[in-house]
Length: 252
Image 1 (cartoon, rainbow, N blue to C red):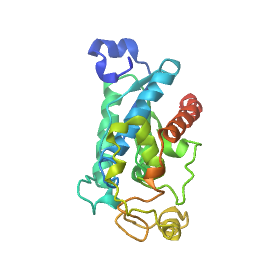
Image 2 (tube, rainbow, N blue to C red):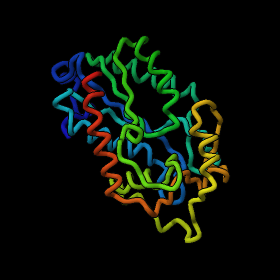
Image 3 (cartoon, one colour):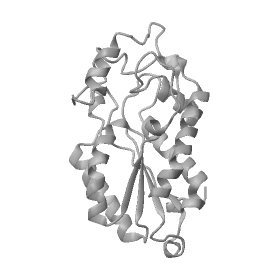
Image 4 (tube, rainbow, N blue to C red):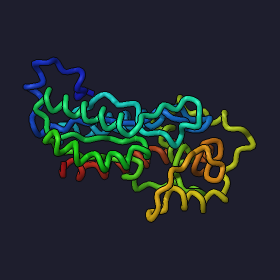
């Protein structure tokens, strides 16, 4: 890919970037994803989707890939070893600093955040207003998994590390997927459905839920059996999200 921001030399910034250039910032997380997926799953998804986005639309929309921000808001997974979560204040301070530096250092005035972690969504929706006003840049956020029109035929809502997310990783980073680490006794519990709906999906109420709660999760997994995942489903999810991204880039 020839549209890595970091591969440009300092003099090339003025020659290659304009105010209509779109800088693409992937943001993910480091958090538990069950015994079968790595901590950096969401960062891989954000970074790899950004790469594909820039490969496909880079020349058309003047896209440039920025290095991924690997940490996000992951307090719902902080019960588990390995999870590294920022607090709200730290993430907003960091994003404000990053945006400010790109606004100072480049002529680009359009920035697209590619978000790979559902837990980042709320703060990105709220804070994007401040980022746009403070730095006088156009801001958009893409959530690839939500943008996709491909659906997993799952017995449970696909929230975290289940059939859908595992399928995406089988497409983007298959060597990081270790389904053999799931115990033979593992089973997605259909009794979790009502509590998932109440604690996570109910739009009328907000609760601070945890993936360590055995009322909604099994082994930190909230969703269908990951062993039913496939690279074909993962590719369909990514491809449909890429297809839907064109009009977003046009609008930005």
